[in-house]
Structures are given as structure tokens and as C-alpha cells.
Image 1 (cartoon, rainbow, N blue to C red):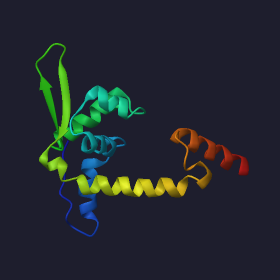
Image 2: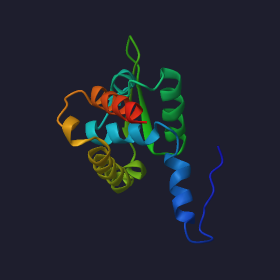
Image 3: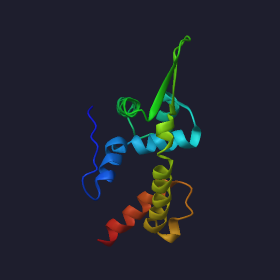
Image 4: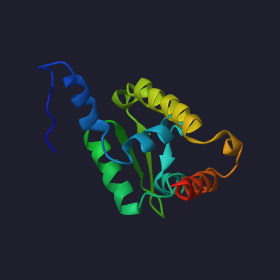
Length: 136
């Protein structure tokens, strides 16, 4: 996959960043690697429930090709593989932290007060969606 250097006009550095972290699950994968250090493939699958194993493998492969993630393969039986951030990948920490902070803010704004203390995030979101549909 060919990568480009975008430095020609205002906003181009954002394009440079997005070509590395764009993809529905890449930022989520990076978030979990920042929080947990090294993760095995199965761990990432459990943490990112809605991502298929095929998509997870594709996204990890792209991150590896971009030198953001390092795949460690251990020659044991059964085979063991884990993923960790490279030094280059660790430089994305401020970006992922900013995304987490903004996402927390969005969730607080989007979820109505009465459901904010719900322990089941999906249940709270489903309840809010149902109420909004009834209001329409």
C-alpha cells in the first residue's frame, strides 16, 4: 500500500495522519494496545466484539505494514502471536488520547442524564434510541 506525504496546503498533515489510522477499527486497536501494552490476537477479538476476526487481521496487517504495530511470533506449540506498538506507533499517543477524551465528552452529551449511570452502555443507548423513535 503506497503512502503519500501531504504537506502542500493547510489540512494536509491531517490527511497524512488519517492515511495511517483511518479504518473503522485501527484507532480502537491502538487504544487497546496503549491501555494494555502487548495484546494477543484473541484478546483483541474479545475487547473489540463487533470487529470480525478477518477485519481485525486486515487492520493489524495494515498497521504492521505502516510500522505502527509490531507482530511478535513465538515458535511454540500451539503458535503464539502478540502485537505491540512500535516506537513510531507510540508517537500516536496524543492522537488516541484526544480521541478518547472527545469520545467521553460526546457520550456524556449524547446519553440523557437519566441513563448516564447505567452499567450497560448498549442497554442505555438502546433505551435512548427507543425513546427518540417514540418521540418522532
